[in-house]
Amino acid sequence: MSWKHVCNVDDVGELEVAEFEVEGVKIVIARSSEGYHGLPPSCPHMEQTLVDAVVQDCTMTCTKHLWQWNLQSGAPMGLAEMPLKLYETKVSDGSVLINFEQELEYEFEDSDE
Amino acid sequence: MKINVQTPDREISFDCAGEERLLHAALRNGVALPYECATGTCGICKGRAENDDVTALWDDAPGNKFLNTKKGEFLLCQAVPNGDCTLRVSSSVGLMSKDQFLPGACKGKVKQVGDLTNDTKLLEIRTDQPISYNGGQFVLVKTPEVSGYRAYSFAGYEPSTNSLKLIIRKKPDGRLTDWLFGKDRTGSELDLFGPLGIASLCPGTHGNIMCIAGGSGISATMSILEHAAATSHFNRFRGDIFFGVRTAEDTYLLEEFSRYVSSYPSRLRVTIALSDSDIPSSLRDAFPKINFETGFVHEVAGRSMENAFDGVTAFLAGPPPMVDGAIRMLLIKGRVPATSILYDKFG
Image (cartoon, rainbow over all chains, first blue to last red; front, side):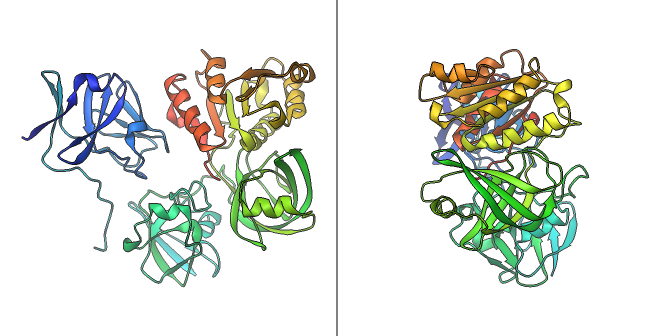
């Protein structure tokens, strides 16, 4: 386990999304009704920044093409065609931490490589 | 030429003519390859092929920024095949459903061009074969004198018709609008491909509807309104229309909207939102059946539809910032499910 500090709990208001940096890597923290969720900064669809995504209850919607996910499980909802990658995230002593072993990236199918 | 498409869950084949864009060939064969703008800007139609299997028609397409060209990615709406080939697409692809009209190519001639405002014209086209479409869909238009297709919403609705109307707003440095606005183009030949788009009325499925439109996006709204009226939709359901412009001089179609409101006084409501000026009393007096408000159209719509969002299907059409603002308002304030928010983004 490699828990790294991303931000303070007050840095992200409820139902808000903000971007931070951990060891040079961009991390987005989305705060839902269930807590804080750490994820890669861009939508897996067409790489729209998720800082502009809308959070309602425990669902995040990327407003570019309306892909949606459950923020606890990363499961795709509505139009989304792939799951959202999530960092294990926890709150401790007023800090939001993620278990950061390496940067989470989306691998797009590369069947001929 | 035979084109084979591999997707995550299936393989589909279709035929494509020599100089035909791959996206067009797929769609006219009922193969629902993903697209959004169909005009080289959004990147949604990207696929992969081997090196020399396809030729890209537009090297400077804005949508090229979404491509990983080292992996052979290209835009299907801007490419033609060089022979039989295999493409790969990362989305699930199915066949178009039976209640959609298969698009096709046809020729047309400019029948008439009229002024709606100082920067917007109504273009009437006569096609060489009838086209069927649903209200809210769009068509690609090309003239031999300007390269590349442009997308325009059908501005009205008629089932199976040779008469099309498009609303065209002058675009700064736009080569097609320079061509159209620069000279009398009556009789000019056009190539068309359509109908396209998913933000269209499905009379059997949709109930209460609301439309938020900015600028020439009102074209798609008028098309939806006409299709709804033609199918007696407002006998059972409500329609709330919001048209956003800057000033009173930018408004048009108000007589047409007034006529529809008169036909369905308790079901249909039309509101014009002026973002950059007050509402002249002369405008209110001239169009007593229409509501006028000041502010941005998506904010006006949000206030106006308070407590009335339940079960509504929302159609959006207009400049990207307006569509984005409307999406956020509908999700957050309206709590409208994302699957009930429909729009085609092009231009």
